[in-house]
Length: 336
Image (cartoon, rainbow, N blue to C red):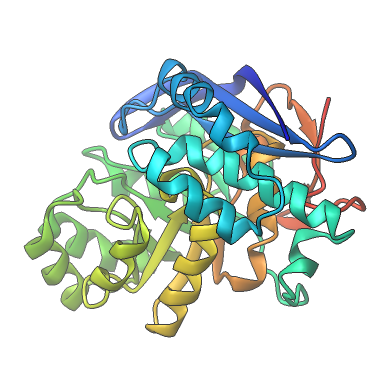
């Protein structure tokens, strides 16, 4: 099997701001695994919060190239299990490899990935579209630029309720709020009642991940469901979320790919938790992988490709929140 790395700087349509950072671009690494007949593609992104750089991704992947390329007949589950010991300190890199190999494997089986998994796509959820923190005028302008049935609104400022109150005047869309650890428990409880009146569906990770006592208090007293993000990174975190959150948002880069991501979603559902997958501003390469998990989800945030000035690949398409699969096998991705 042959390994090829493709590095990109994905330029965003607008400056993207959350409670802890702003950016105008996103560095992305696409892994290509080829067996001579088929190529599989997987993606991960850099992330300062998790200390993931392009250098660290390249170093760990190229440093283990021989081990990676020696695996060619394994199932995706076996592939992931054999590489995990080598990549347990950099699951972002393992994510790109896992998605690429799973894409390749499904192509060898002459099936779309969702069909290889035997999943029913008839009740797939729609994706939200994210509005980053900005002036209210700019946030309204972004909504008008792309009218959408569900908006995910980034908050974590001192005037969050005023922002949502103003945005509500301009759309009847469902709102989801992501405070990215920006609130205290008392703020979140108070805000939950006001935001429920403003048509908000749920709150995503309003508290810092280490605030366990705050999470217990919020879980008992919130007017809205609370979805874990930074508190649910790897498989062992899912069970810990019971009694602290009403659902979990699984990020493929953080957990190490679609293979563990699928297990996390199935585990969460078995524990009565709502299921969600979110993106890390990936291109259509990473977003297309998420699409094949849709039958396992209650909610999804897979708007990464929509936030880019120019995409780097073709694959799934999204129109007014509805996701359509590519005609081709695997995840359906082809690099432009």
